[in-house]
Image (cartoon, rainbow, N blue to C red; front, side):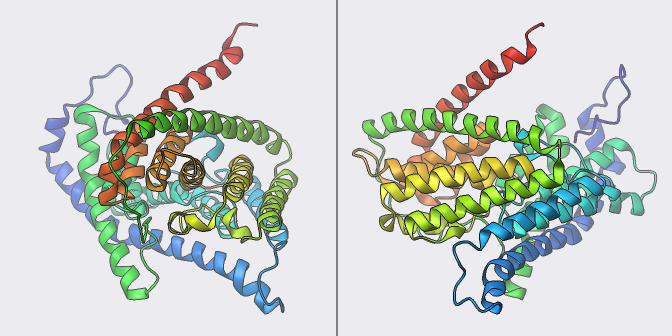
Length: 444
């Protein structure tokens, strides 16, 4: 992603300040601004298509077949079809459907033009039919890939370093509004890239420009079409009192619990991924059936909607907090277990991003603990989100911002608690990860 990516090994990298002052950098900013409009529009269209597929397959189709309401067993065949379509796309189309979500949130660079259809189809089959993943990873890949393809059409001789910055800007534009703020999406990509210092600034300027333009396009298209912006928002956030000593204690507990849960989810996903890759299509169907059965078990055991286990959980976060009083501790525990297993299974075989399901699981865990003395629901909700996000993403600053900016003004109040839970979860996750990797690196 950096401007130095095109430098030959052993050569000195150009001074970033010198690069910024060049005419070529100004031309690059203009190109990024122009490309930000169609790329963000394409990202909006992708999210709209995913939403329509979810509504069509889960609501409209069973109604058209004569069911008064969606049967609780409906996700089982739906997810089997998702596994079949995703497996076929990964196996037969170039690019293996994009990055493997079980391996964490990583930026593998812009895909080629030949890989874009496979990434889009695998993501649509996974997300549109109910896999427990989010849209952020496919959007980042598609945004970066489309930006580079368009840049090479406009300027066939574009340098690799400039192409890398255009790809980064395309990714910024694609996720500009998804996380609730263009700054939050930009921060996610910056922290994931690992860039620092002046080189970060070199990439950041075109990225922020594309992100701002993308956010405006999302807002405009959402208003024009009436579909909304597909942005992460909470319609109602209960008041959070000032943090107490007891809540700081709960922050330690939540951080440790999230690290253990996140490590378990990741290890199970990686173990299943190895088995899935041996027989891609058949194993993907089996993984889809597993997710469907978990949704069925949740619906039958709690009387609630199976869709709470399915999908990313982005749209369900607001209802989870607003309707907290309607969830018993037992229901929340069953939801957490079924969602976590479905999440791990989806990570192993489908294509999508890991962010939103981790947020939902953390929120549900925090709300479950808030039924105990000394912890209010809003604080538990926020701490759970931050702790679980960092356990799955290993991006501490992004995890803190995701948990606090989502709550609006109440996020400022709970931020100290979120920071403690994130730090505990992050440190323990790294230690658990190191211990699990040690046997693999030991000499034979």
